[in-house]
Image (tube, rainbow, N blue to C red):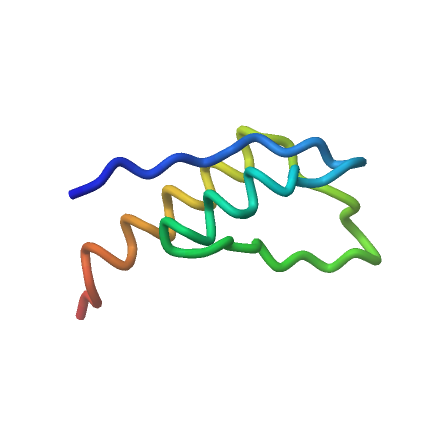
Amino acid sequence: MRPRHAPRVASRSGCRRQAVAACQASGGVRRIPIDERHVRSLNLSVAAGIGLFEALRQLDGPHG
């Protein structure tokens, strides 16, 4: 399994082209949908928590 990296992104400037190219080469860029009327951006720790939660949810499978 190849290691995955989550580049940090400045909320004002976005990703550098090199970072986007590296993400696309390793499986694609992921976006966290937010309601921009109420939330302008997520800080790094919140975004990382959401990403980890979703990754673990998908690995663990459905419960019930």
